[in-house]
Length: 471
Image 1: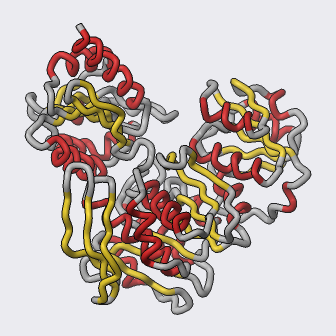
Image 2: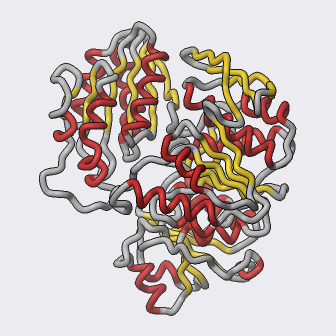
């Protein structure tokens, strides 16, 4: 099913006496929307293919949960929400259509919650989850208690969504299927623009066109925060003709700029200036120059919303990261295990640069699981080049994410472009774990990398290393 880019005419009040059923309620985006609806006293039910802590949390808040997709699960529902990941053949979706129930896409459902708020939509090819999380934490420190819906978990909050008492709503805006055009935010952030989601977009021009359309959805009197270090985003700025929104740039030559950058294995800092005037010192408890720029975007948006810069900077300094974004899972005998969601060559390059700095003189070992056949085919050489930054990269088989196989496309098309010492094609997670436990030494860093289920390997590695050094 495709998320529609047509705005829903429903309001939050319209949902008050209806039961809303979520197909795939355990997903990151869907669970967040369900959580906020429950906070508003709306009846919620939903299903997923397997049970999870996420579903259990929703049940604790009052939701009805079903394991497995069955037509009878929608009995009593008044409206159905289904994301673009749900097949048209899904029995619940088919039953909803047969019964004449209204069906909303994930983005449409979220837009209902964002209406009548000072909404900020955070978009871009990379950095959306981290930047959305940073802005949320910074606004919380400023006492504004925003509502938020994020595609990943904020580590300090332990949740990806919340119905705040303030009038601000911060939302991660996923461009992957174009559905973010329904949000109509007061403000927007664009972190960067590159070609991705090649299953939806044939070329970069189509992505640029989509972001042009996104800028047009910003409410009159609103603002756009955009990084001009991204060449495509900088080009986009030059084509914007709207005079009824404020354009706020950041990066080299931007309105907001960084200087005195300092990077360490576990933190980063910089001085932030706006139009040449020093705003303050930014100190982050997470590594990576890219995160300094993500924080700059959050700061600029927070100031545009009227929050004090010093309180926003304090909030950013307390930010401890987001789940699956260079998340340290543990350390055994001096060997650090990190998990990261990176699944695009640019993300992998930035992540491995950070990993290299974190490991210092130690080795960087990578377990990479490509996500989707189409992305692997389109970026095989770029993946290979990025993975060469590791001392050794074990490349698992492709995580399909419901995509049909493409003839001749396997993970080997990545490792064929790598040296034998750097890139190893190994489809078995068990074999990879055995090799890593055997080879890794104190001071080394192992990173599980990808948007599929490669993160399940991290606890296995921790347990296996513990067993090895306990013996």
